[in-house]
Length: 95
Image (cartoon, rainbow, N blue to C red; front, side):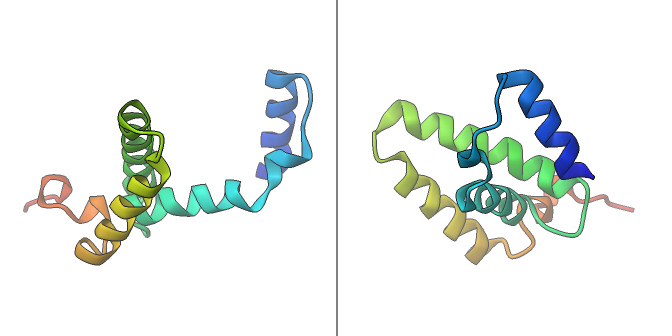
């Protein structure tokens, strides 16, 4: 149902739904957002989406090889922050 609604909204926004919009890279991009933010919470994917967009836009202004740098950031977050950005002390609730 959610996919149908998103397809409808894409058709309304762009006037057409191109089959390229449902390629594997689109779902991979969504997975990168969840990995970066942290799974299992509502705040994690929100942080991941915001973080990934900021990283991508920042690297696009610096170099044409921005995808390599973005991938490096995702790998570093996966290695050193296994629970994602939501695992940082800044986002944890203290009792």
